[in-house]
Each structure stands twice: as structure tokens, then as C-alpha cells.
Image: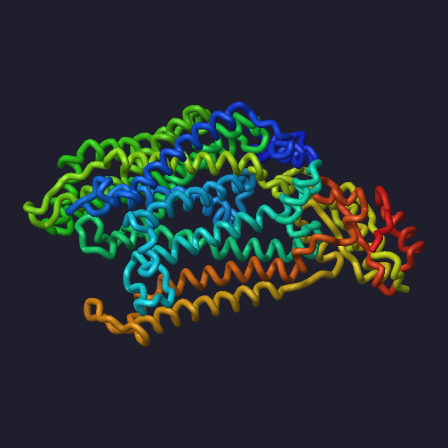
Length: 459
Length: 178
């Protein structure tokens, strides 16, 4: 028998051989050297071109109005809300990584939190496009969304989940931005100190606020960061809960269900982690960051994706169960129509994407092969978009009376707007990695072996 | 003995352990106006220089309470005072439906209080600070650790303090111009 008990040592979060200086220089050089890999130019070019499609689609929308979209009675909610929910959901993984994993002391969040938070911001921006434009007349939307003393003396209706959504999403964006900026301050100081050009020193210097790394500042900084994490955690759970209220408060079959809040939150994190993987895998390859974003990071993210995917699968199962167990004609019809009605291919493709595909993640081989993992993540991204499509459209298109039944399809303008926001997202993301460190430099320093204070004397 | 011609004396170390030992020794030697600069947060060192400030959590609590009152107050005022409309027979002050907005504004105000409070308590933004006059200080944001004895310290003496810091295994000790 082996006398030594077997102990499990997880692989290190940073490849061996790195020092404070090497970590700092490697990440800062991506921004300061001025050299970008070919992939950056290709990415930003494609992203910018597609953003122009968005601009075109929005311009035409403002000229013509929402008649250019596929929405009509009975399906009055179409791509705008589908895309909004999808984008907001993607944002949730960034906050989960930065806040919840911080509170749970998960060291592996360190190298992925910065770009995941950036992803959150850009995803929320893309999401924000849709509520803003969904009436086709955004300049009229202000008075029923924002409580301001208008000359008409009327006020928003605070009993409506749609106004809760306005507050939830704008708070979410603001807090995500604060969290991201606070995390950036010490790194901006690093860039200020490393930059050679005077103009860069001034720009980074202004945003670094004169940060000098005083331990007194660090002490308050850590308090603020921890408090922000504690605040962002309930916030992120509340945001998709409120988004689900947009549906659950209404009495439409398939929407009016108590499982929606947890099911939406799990779906958001599921999709968000898939998107983080979609971004992380090409990034670490393009910039040679395998030392910092290791296979252990990818594997952990894959595990979170698998777990949340199983929760989502449970949600689908419960929806079907409720349809039968409620003994309600309309609920039962809704779920049967979803599976076998005119939109049946969408439903079964979504089951394939969201329930069957992630089962590959049970295999360690798949979790640690970046190429396979990327494919699984892409399938999940598509599946989660389909999920929102199925929820929105199948519940609406069969109204309570057959005389009010209809069909819904996105028009070319619907697709142009949706794909356009993908371009906006890609463009913003590539600009971010060009001008700001995509990995938190100061937090990476804490992972270097010398970072720990050894055998302190004098206590 | 304060010295108006100097901001203080700065000692450079190449690892956190030496800085921590030096901070303890400086404290034991009777220095009180100390500051240290590190490339990442190290809790032990702020303890070692005797720094303790827990005001931020109270500021955040205040922000949260203000946000809660503002959120509920806004909705109460809109629906019960200035613009009461009957929706589905619900009372004007239908508090369960005011919970989400109240919650969101509580979080929003707390988060703003945390960030603004941290920046203001730290005395930022402060583009100029005397320590930036030391050329090697730019490494405080890379891989070096610094201990500063400020000239305002009653025990400060240009010569003696520099000699003292040199005994603490500092790589380099420099004067900081004000």
C-alpha cells in the first residue's frame, strides 16, 4: 500500500516562471507596443462593416417606423425583445465572474474578469439599443420611461414590469461600468508609468486619477471593491428576474409562470459563459495568452456552462410538466403547439442546442480541447437566442381565439438590426483590447509565487 | 524634527516581505507618519504602518438608505400624491409593486457611494504628488515596493532617517522633493 495519502493539487492559475515584471510587461505591451496581430485588423474590419449595417437599418427604421419589421397583431413583440433578452443575458456572466466568484474567493476569475466585464458592458449597450428603438420613435419614448417633470404633467406607471426593467437595466449598466472602472484604475496607473509617448501618459494619467499605489489607498480600494461585489451580486440576480417579469406578470400562456425568474437567471449565466468562452478561446490564441488563461480556466468555465445548462434543461422540463399538470386548456395547448405546431423545428433545434450539445462537457477531453469547447459554446449561443424566440413567438402567435391566430417571421430589417448589433459588439470589444489591458494586471501580480508575504516577523 | 525642504525619504524594496519587515521596524523605531506603495494590495502592510479606516462601509450604508428612500418616495409621490390613477383597482400606494424600483435604486446609490466615497477618502484625483519626483517610483506600478517616511513625522531627520532606512535591506534610499 502507498503510505502517502493521495492529495489533489489543482494546476496553477498562471504558468510557472512569471514574475511581477513579466506579467506587467506582457499585458501592458499588448496595448502600448502598438502592434496588433492580424486577427485584430480582420476582426475590427468585419465588426465595423457590420456596424454600418446596423446604422443603415436604424436609419431606415427612423424614416419608416416599425412597419418595416415583421411584428403585427397577434405577435406584437418580436425581434426587439428577443434580442434585448439575449444580449442582457450574455452580460450576466461578466458580473458573475467579477462579483460572485470574487465573493466565493475563486482565484481563477482573475485573468478573465476584465474582459468578461467589458463583454457585460458592450452586451448591455447592444441590449439597450432595442428598448430605445422598439417604438420606431425613440424621441417619444422618454416620458413613459423616465420619471421627469414633463410639461404634460404625466408620470410613468410604476406598477408595470416594463418600467422596472428600465430601472434594473440602467442600474445594471451603471454599476457594471463603476465596477469595471474601479478595477481599471491601478492598471491605468501602470500604463501611465509604462507609456513612452507624452500624449498617452496624459490620457492614461487623467483616467488613473493620480493613483500611486499607497497601501492606505489599497486598503480603502479593497473595501470598495468588496462592497461593490456584494452589491452587484443581488443586482445581477435581480436584473434577469425583472426581465422575466416582463413576461411572467402578463397572463399569456407560457409566460405566466413562477419558474421564470430562476430559469431566466440560469439561462442568462449559461449563455453568458458560452459567450465568455467564445471570446476567450480566440483571444488567448491570437495574443498568445495561454500562460494566463490556462486550460484550467477554460475547464472551469465549461463546468459552469454545463451546470447552468442542466438548470435550463430542468426549466424546459418543468414548463412541459406545468402545461400538463395545470390541467389548463390554454397552457396545455401552448406547450403542445410549441413542440408540434408551426414552430416545431425551432423548439427541437433549441432542445438540441441547449440540452443535448452541452452534455459533451461531461467529458474532460472536450473541456480541455479549446476547439471543441468553442464549437459547443457557439451552439449554446445560438440555442439561447432560439429559446427567447420560442418563448416570445409561440406564446403570442396562437391567441386565445383561433380567429386571432397568426404567424411571425423576422423581415430583412429585423435581421439587419440583430446582426448589426453583433457587429457593434465585436467592434467595441476589439477597440477595448486595443486601448485597455484585457487582463487585470494588478490582480495577475497577486498570482505570482513571490506575491505572498513570507514568515513575517515583528508581530 | 520636521524638515520643510523635503516631503520625506523613500526606501525601495524588491519584495513584499522586506517591505513588511521594514514597516514593522520603522514603527518600532517610533516613526508614525509612514506610507507604503505596492503594485498590488497587501493587507499586512497597512496593518504594519498602523492604518485603519472603516468609514467607507458607513458611507455605503448611508448611500443605500438614501437610495431606498428616494426610490420609494418617488413612486409614492407619483402614484399617491401627484398623479393617482386607478390600475386594476389597486390602491394608490401599492407597495409590493414598488419593491423592484426601490431595490434597484438602493443598489445604485450604494454603489455610487462606494466608488465616490473611496475616491474622495483617498484624496483622488490628485495628478501631482511629491513621490512621483523620484524617477524609480514609476516601478511602484510594476514590481517594486516602497516605504515613505514623511517629513512631518516628529522623529524625522534627513540624515538619521536615511541611515535608518539603509539598515533595513533597502535596495535604494532617496529623498523626496516636495
